Image 1 (cartoon, rainbow, N blue to C red):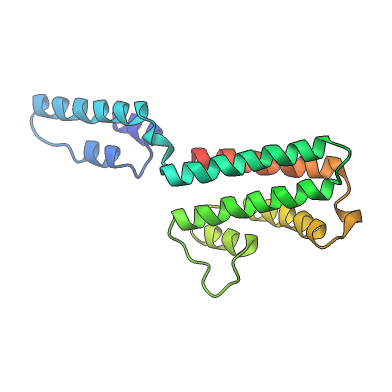
Image 2 (image 1 turned 45 degrees about the horizontal axis):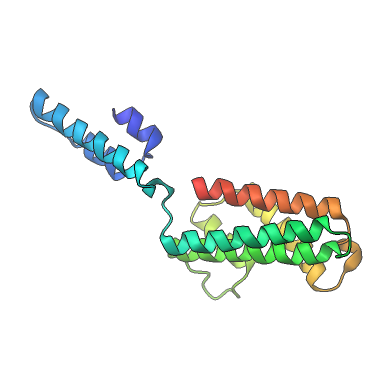
Length: 176
């Protein structure tokens, strides 16, 4: 059961800690472990496994809606792809900011922004080196668009890759 909980509840979960700490006679141990497993199932059934507070879930829903708007901008040739890049970058920044807040991390004396948030998350080992490289690349495209460097933000395919990358990145982090 401990291996099951380690895999599905996580190596640092309270369910696993309680299961590992279970002692006593066989009948008592089985009853205790059964109770822990039942609690884990109820935890999953009510949706608490996402680990997102209602406030964080609402923030994620808003970011998701904005990414949908960025996709619509990108699909419509009436709009310059830079508009979508700016919106995607803003969504990424909001996602990182709320994640930093949810983890009670600090950016220290750094100016709040994508770079500071990604560094704080990397320091807390919540992001990999590759994640930081991807984030830096996406932030660069957003900055080109925001500063009117149109030639750097005019490739729809590049902006579409940015959108897909940010979407994938956010979905994967929501599950972690």
